[in-house]
Length: 206
Image (cartoon, rainbow, N blue to C red; front, top):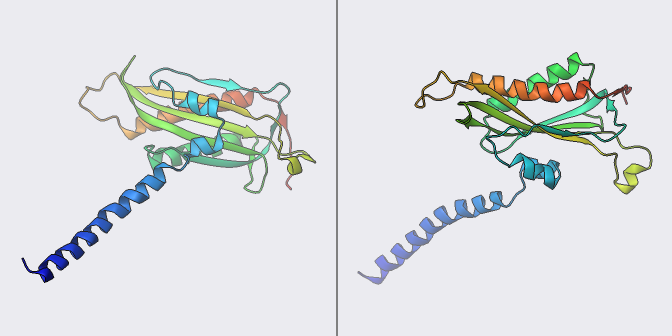
């Protein structure tokens, strides 16, 4: 092999290295970023949301004397691996259910209802079915004087699990997407039941 061939081979090797190393670095950067769940929810709720997916851990924390503002900014996100159609379905259903309960969606409102679809996957025990887990945080509007300190009233936070059993399917058949839609609707219904039990605080457009 002459020196020219060796140099050309070295140049090709460096080019190939760049092609393979650059995506690896980009992936490493992505994995270092916080997820939607980690960015928007307290650590203890993140830990609960990542706990055993096979059991129902629907749970809510509502501060004493808390009232729900009727104008709210809605933010819906999803964790990696959750189908985009399932997330879109959740946002549409939540918007519809909120409107039916007298809530107005206002993107400029400080009060914010944050929904994160944590996981939508198949489970096999205790019965085979599609399951969807969501977490929610309803943060009220800052009171006068709180904006400068960064302090806000405690928010309602919680987790809701929804499941659509499909015991009629054999183990070799994929769970239909419609089953995930129904499971998501059950989880959303649990959230709405919680909101139904909280006194409303009518808020005027800003």
